[in-house]
Image 1 (cartoon, rainbow, N blue to C red):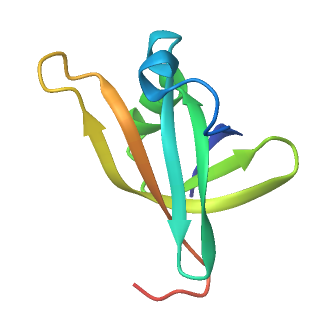
Image 2: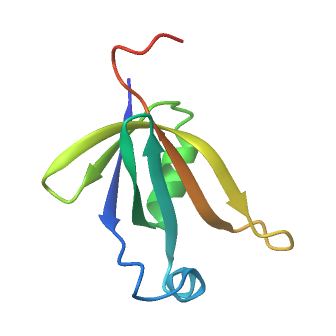
Length: 98
């Protein structure tokens, strides 16, 4: 079973990661074999809900257009506060073997 997480495409020429985090969002990167790196913005509250669900496979909903299966490859936290500052998602294919 997978948990759903809504993500929005990120314009790299827009606000910086620091500015996004001040607004309650977290920058993220989605990558994998045969896929171009894609940059997203995630609401920090939604990410915490997904992390608390203890699910390993996450269903990323990119707008209303498509869905991707992913694993959290790396989750970066701020050293002093423990707040999440960046997430890396690794693409998962249903045909991939563990």
